[in-house]
Length: 90
Image (tube, rainbow, N blue to C red):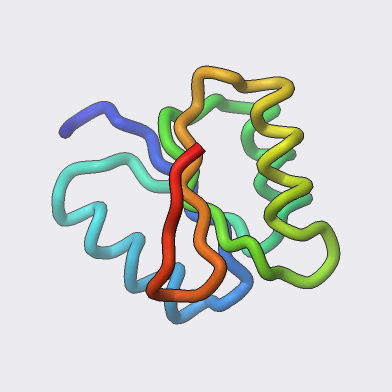
């Protein structure tokens, strides 16, 4: 799995850090953002292959972030979750 760049976007730091650590152990390149705005700024600097996106966040919600990612980075796979046990793919 080396070389696959994953961006984790979640306002819950414990969840984000735990998932990041698990992915790094499996040799993914992982970046973290605590908000949708931060995620979009990061993607503007460096594209990623996969985005794991929380839908419910303060400020810009995950649905708006998903729309903007698909507008500017259509090749990125986005996995979105409404709560910590429910995920979908776009």
